[in-house]
Length: 224
Image 1 (cartoon, helix red, strand yellow):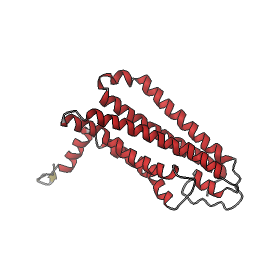
Image 2: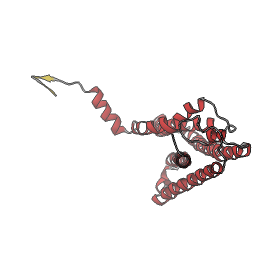
Image 3: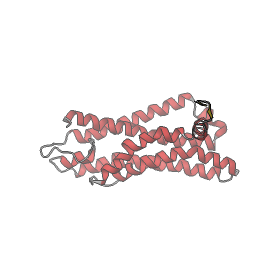
C-alpha cells in the first residue's frame, strides 16, 4: 500500500538517483578515455574543480529529468483501478492506470527517458571505441592493463544500461517481464557495484588470495 503523494515521491527519487547513475557512468567512461588516451594531461584535464563540476552537472541533469517525469505524470487523472503492476511506482505502470488518452504523454516519456538513456549510451560506447582505437598499437602488457582498467566499468554498464534501454526506449507499454529487467538496474547492479569495483583492486585481490590459500597448521592444541 502506498499513498498518491508517496508514489509521486518514489517516482521522483527513483528517476533522480537513476539519472545520476546514468550520467556518472558516462562521466566515468570519459575519465577512462582521458586516463588512457591522454595520460600525460590527465591531472590537468580531470582536476578537482573539473570533477566537482561534472558531479554537479550530473545531479542537475538528473533533477531535470526526474522533474519532467513527475510533471508528465502528476496531472493525469486516476479514477479507475489503483493496483500497479510493478513493485515500485514508475511512469509506464502509472500511465496504464490513467483515465485518459496517454499516447502523447507516452511519446514525451520516451523522448525524455529513452532518448536520454540512448544518447548517454552512445556517448559512452564512443568513449570506449576511442580507447580501443588508441590502444590497438600498445604492447600486449599495456593493452591488457588498459582493458583491465575498463572491465569493471563495462560490466556495470551492461548490467545497468541494457535493461534500462529495453524498458524505456520502446513505446509506452508494460509487460510482465519489465519487473524482471527492472530488478537489474534497481537492485542487482547497485548490489554488485562494490564487489565489481573492489575485486579489480590489487590489494583486495592479494588479501583474498591470502585468505583463500592460507592452510592452517596444527601445533599442539592450537591453529596458526
